[in-house]
Length: 35
Image (cartoon, rainbow, N blue to C red):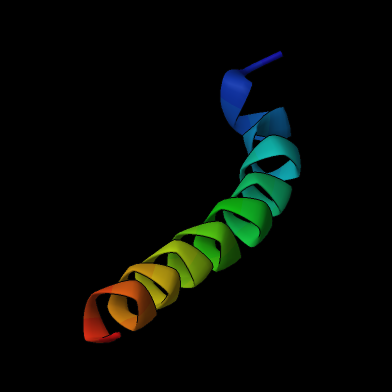
């Protein structure tokens, strides 16, 4: 088994969780610095 065969199964949900978390973090920092 090559890692590439099961990589998307881990990579897709990881990105699905990390991307919103980063977006919320950036938005939170922007709101906090704006106040």
